[in-house]
Amino acid sequence: MAIIDWDETPSAGDCFDDTSWSNMVTYIKHSHSCDFIIYDDESSTSQKFKFSYAGNDNTLEGDDTTGKSLILKATSADAYPYITLTGNADIKEYFKAGNAFYLYDSAVQAFKMKYAANISTIEGGHASGDVLILKANDIDTYPKITLTGNGSISCSVKSGDAFYFYYNTTTFGNFTSDAADWYISSAANRNIVLNPHGAGYVKFGTYSAKGAEAFDGFITMKDAAGNIRKIMTCA
Image (cartoon, rainbow, N blue to C red; front, side, top):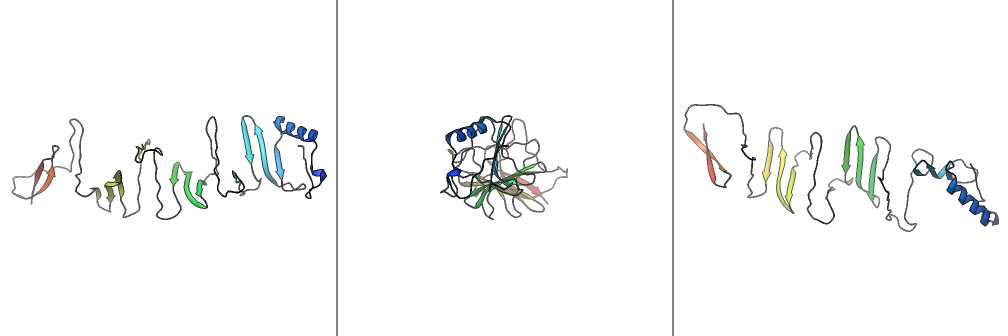
């Protein structure tokens, strides 16, 4: 490996003549087997920055010590500038098993993705009460989002809370449960409609035969046409 060093104190010796500089740049451009490494001083073996090329991969690395960070900044003046990554194929982000990929708003966590034990997790902020919104695009206010899975799709909420559906900004209904019951609730003055397709029916609990009895009350329901019907009950 070729090593080019210069004094810590600026001097005429720090400058390369045109031929030397041209040769160095040509060597970096055309030597596919040599890494370009920057160290913290001329006698150090502590890597601070490294460019390498092998096969079809261009690699940029920071320190060679475990636990160090590599920070890319678009400018030296802005604390959190805009950086664009582009590629003809995929842009991949790799991290050590068990770790996560974070996005920050200034120094505050805004987004987190992680993978462990065959479970992929997307999280929002790090503060209690933060909201995570998934939108199909940034034009429509309430676009369609599709969730698919080979098995089940689980929606979990904190104990005592509910899972809500909205129509525009109006609460459409919610699901919730306790130790014994599962509740489907609509917003105020709205019906809950169970609408089977074709020749299908709505199924209820197990039927038990019983002899004739006088009814002791009724439950009010609506049929498919919206007519109010009274379902009799017996003692």
